[in-house]
Image 1 (cartoon, rainbow, N blue to C red):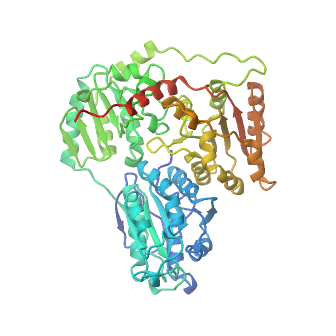
Image 2: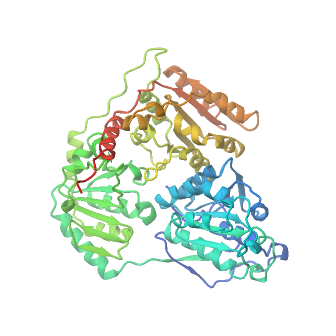
Image 3: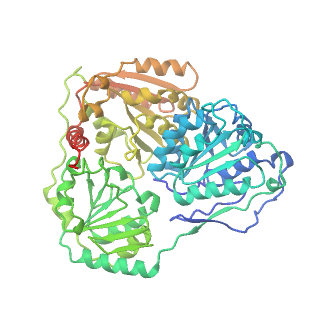
Length: 607
């Protein structure tokens, strides 16, 4: 999984090379002179082109947008930047989801929408990116600068002469907000916003008045000094003390285990985690929301730890361990299966991006995860007892019963065939729903990407995220698993995938409703209107671009469809509608749903 800030190998910035150190840090501007001429033609010395150059510099070569009258001039200047491609989306929500998916691959993403009607539409996607710690730059075309401070009522607002409604909404889901309605400090606000997004690994909001992007200004007449992110440093005494305490804690354990969590991404600690896994010999597991961040080909990998719905034999090893180190965990109601994990705090070491907690205490602050894991690897005693126990009790997973010819297709058979598609040149995007559980059981080969949105869990996320992820990393073929209910929320931007020439394979799992909601709490509202999904995609294809669709009802048809998608139509976007029974779900969803339902239905505490 690529977590670098800036894909320098994809696009060379016009203003020099960005220095994005592996573990992030405080944003600073380094006084350096670009190797090429610093002169910029007057027509390019504008706010719009300055923003475009800054985006390119941090590795953004694609911006997802929806035009509106307040951002049209700004879009002109983004289009004029030769190293930047504007991707027009069907709606703002999908533009935000696409920027989210793009950031997961490139390390940072960007979207551009119009004032309020666009901003509030993209807000849900920005909130999801915030929850997943993704640096995302949300740019909004704002009102004319002359309208600020007046008593005028503008269109695209709620009818009040107060233009701050959008800003107030974004304050809760971004780590920095810049409202640019004059040119004097525009470059400073843009630089601060972008560097803050990268530094904090969170979204930021930039509003630019619609009359400003085209105005030349001397401040934009030379290439800006390159962004450089100064390296964050651990407190050395705290680091030494944390490592000493952790080594003592783990070295006296009989069967310790190591579990990777989702915050390893923001801590950029993947390599350090593997270093510790190699040195320790511990059994290595991954939390569900971190799948793809821990190499599953590691010799001591034991699976996904997800409480009662863990992969086979993993929970037994983790929960019976006498010490467990969690790197970057998030224990919410979903990842804890309704708060039912059988873990004891006194047995745990919890390593967050800048803090280490050992048992019930002590806590060591200002200690970076990657530094801690790397240094601990040099102090730990090799102990493979937990892995040996796993290996001893492990029974290879059985295969689904062989289907008889023309028998209705089962979901477990579908994913058996998806497993065969996975290589180092593929990536999996799993939609919220039963795909969470089925995709968790996929065994990822080395180099295979994997993404899903567990913390926020917004249905429909995967359509836009697939668009963005595939645009960011065109050398991989994305395999997207989407339920019919989720697809209906955001289906339009399959047309954008076709327009961009993407070669994704989408498996649309048609089971007639919101299956994940059925297993939490059933009701008539979980049944949706069935679509002819292949006909829908054929309609938006409309003979333009490369797109192929198929509808399958049995295993033989599925095998034929996959063969076509990977051979004759390997350069096309392939949409395979898989029709399955409405009650055909994974056993993990049945267990998880009942436990989450129990957590949701807890009675109020006595007053």
